[in-house]
Image (cartoon, rainbow, N blue to C red; front, side):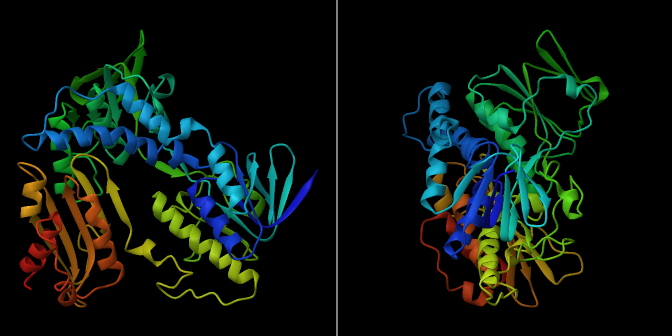
Length: 464
């Protein structure tokens, strides 16, 4: 079998793998980037980018309708929305991503790579890639399939099909009230589908504060989405091209298309983990440098969804930057600083993870969303009712929450819900990561009139 040797071999050519390989090359190493589908990965072609491209036109249209005097006639043009979405995915052509990798000094390798021994990756065609220093697994995640009777016999959408489709189904049923479920329910409702959203609990976004799920549910209902709470699907069937979803109490949802959006899990089923003493299907447990636990020799790393720590693209890229730098430092015999908030430690994974749900209203959060049990935390909720929000939209409705460590007098969590709050999130992230004392944060004067005025109101309510 032909063999090639590199300093680092990265399995998975999405944004996480690109960052790991790029940082290793920047540190003076050679790196191969192995990808069996498209370089650029899930986020570029089937997740972050196309989903936001589908959502943004509807959000812009509704924002215009909330301001009197703006001439708004008609609805969205689905063909134009799909064309813009296709442009953001480069029409599912990864040639540009390959050129980027080559320009960055990375060697792109097409094929499915599997671990086959220490510092060894074997491809489907028999090629063997050997790593002098490290192998990095960046294979992301795949959708979870719920055990619903009949589901395997139905031609259902997953997240990929929902973001890539170019025809608007007359009726769409969505199972799952997490981020993908609510975003796609709203996107397709605004494109013209009659959407039924089926929730196992009493509100969408169950990991967020209750007010976040409630306000998002209100926004969905305003778009005509029928929200079925506490209604786990009991059976799914398809007859004459029509999907039937049986809910409790004899309720049946009938749709032309079904979307299953019930979460994701690390993509480790087909990685050859047994060859290095690990189990296929499990998340790869790592330390804060990205080093995988349970493998001798300190050569196997994992970043992104595959390690299950914080399954968000931006957080995976953050981990990948640290991993690439750590590998380069260890390769040249340098020191690796694993102390909290050092360049080599992914400390933010533990308490400063930012996330945006791009619905209308948006949900933006970082850190804790509620008080930790037994901790000296105070939670303060407030309506977003400031001059900036009133100018932003008539009848603006939004809420904010801060979670404060009262012993240190610093923020450990912030949540915003409302139109256009996503751009407030980085200020909150800086405050949490920087552990800015509230007495100092008081001197960060928000510009008037902006929605950022809510910071002043929160601190006043807290007692400053």
